[in-house]
Image (cartoon, rainbow, N blue to C red; front, side, top):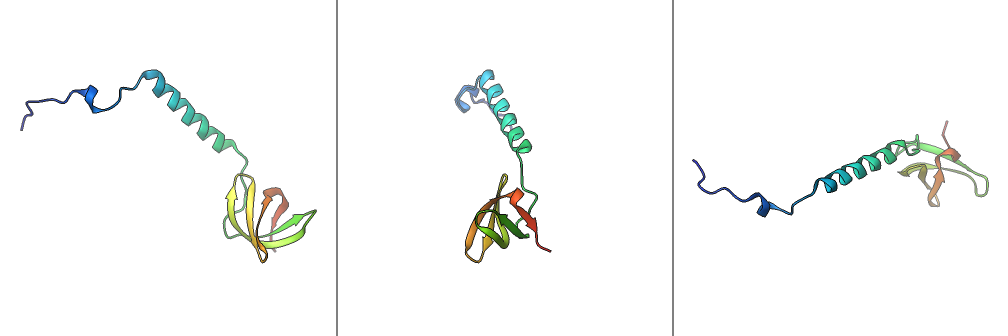
Length: 91
């Protein structure tokens, strides 16, 4: 079936400029690069780890959250956050 009326493209949405599309693409690529090159923790959720904190002593627990270089360790006293360099795997 052939349409006798074609919708005007200008009424289909807000017009977008080429500079806006380029800026949005560049910002998305830069955000992806920041995430890809950011330091991350080698530990996965559920790993049993030992945290060696010079001020609070030794803590044992399970990794419950990760955000960049910070790792949340679930211990008997609650969730404590450590830098991934202060952790090691349990033997």
